[in-house]
Amino acid sequence: MTTRLTPLALSVVTLAAWGLVLGVFSGRPELVVAVAPLLLGLLRRAPVDPVRDWRISRSLSVDRAFEGERVVVTVTVNAGQPVPLLELFEPLPPSLRVVAGSNRGVFTLVRGQEVQWRYEVECGRRGRVSLGTVHARLWDRAGLHAGETSVQAPGQLRVYPRPIPLRRLPRPRRTQASVGNYVSSSVGEGLEPGDIREFVPGDRIRHVNWRASLRFRRLFVTQYHQERNADVILMLDTLVEVGAPPETTLDASIQAAASLAGAYLARKDRVGLIEYGGPFRWVRPGSGRAQYERLLEALLRADVVFSYVRANVALVPRRVLPAQALVIAISPLLDAHFEKAVVDLAARGFDLVILSPSPIPLVQRSTRASPSVDLACRLWALERRARAAALHRLGLTILEWDPREPLEATLAGFTRSRHRSVAG
Amino acid sequence: MWLPSALPVVVLVGYPLLIAPTRAVLTIGVAAIVLCALGVAVRSTPVVVAGGVLALGEYALALWLSTGPPRLTGAVLFGVGLVLLLETVDFARRVRHAAIGPGVVASQVRYWAVFAALAGTAAFVVIGIATAASLIAHLPWAPAFAATGAAVALVAVAVTLRHARS
Image (cartoon, rainbow over all chains, first blue to last red; front, side, top):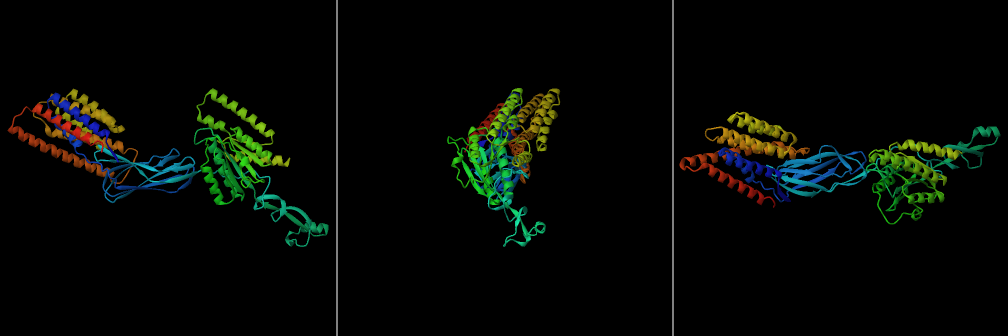
């Protein structure tokens, strides 16, 4: 523990010096007597004990939270010896904001006393938050001396991106073999009626279509479409991001990915993730609650990391990128490598959808408004539109999403356009 | 937290006016009370020190204008008030925007009360000894006070700086 003289001691010395000077010049003993308590205050020194005999522990109300949720931090202080005045300060990362209480506390402890101190923080941005160090300052009663030290009190908090509930999703063109929510083109056991055919031995009686059988005076049965699930691969562009945290294109992309993953998993689909950037990572397709947590964990660490090694989708194992999968590429389309990768995927016959969070409103929000910025953004918008048209000519459909607008509305419009194109 | 600081301000500014109720003393007193009040309000120790210096000036002027024997009891009260003003404002500054644990304020107020009582008692004992000594030996008091004050100040600063880091 490092002890030091506080600014208050210097203030006391200053006043005492002024009193003595005035006493000498005025020739009055009262002024010297008046500054005597100040000087006595300097002489009385309650030394700050360099041996720390108090312990700090910290607990969090939850160790996993979504963006925007609140977490209660409880710090417990145990004292082995009396502590005159203990000031504790817990620096918080920028992604956490104190909403109730204070992350600085002042305590007086008697021997063996335990004090709990609580404050509430709001999780602002996804990520792994480490609450590691508590700074402690031990004051003497007068405030003339202080000892400072740091105490390690490990605490980890995982802040996941907040998923947005989505009702309308891009429908996969191809389905898989497992049972799901999509009406498959193949016939078998299901709920959606399909064709009718003549009865053959082995058919169930309850499948007999009595109306057709009476008309043709032969037994006919109704065939049903099978209900199958699909494989959905979310391909996240982590090559580049623009905007000011916590509203960057990557933040918007990650929130969209979390929302899409939750919505598809709720439909019994298998969902995988490819993080296309410096560190080229992936999560194999899977279903269920555990898979959702795996995806959120992967999204938690997704970040733009510079690398000399460029990612290549050709390196992705086939188990990660199944042939029948719907690939949803989420990218602001600011890096030519990603465009090349999606063109490559489309050429390989993948059912591909590009969801592009527009960087323009995010950049506009983070820069000071001026006519030149406005003009630059309009030119940028034109350039993006031209690039989208070029990709559209290659058979790709790009869905431009303004991150200030709900993703649901954007996806709803996109779903309708896909239906029209399929019908046509 | 402003009440424990407001009481010493009233003592520091009001006592010189009782000694010499003149316009000059009142003017300095008003300036001192404004600075002290500002320092208490914004919890700034430097501003309070400036106010304290003005209060000392007001006190010195009042003493210089007045006649009669030394008022040592009042001087002790003035000094204790000065210490309490500094410490209360500094304490208020330290605990600002902080979660205050149970018993912190009560124990601090208890400490200030004990300190004021002890400092006052010690000062009165020293005054008594000095008065008794003055009856026995007639010394040139002004230089003796100055020398004693300077010596005490030097010792206090030296002791403080020696223990500044450990």
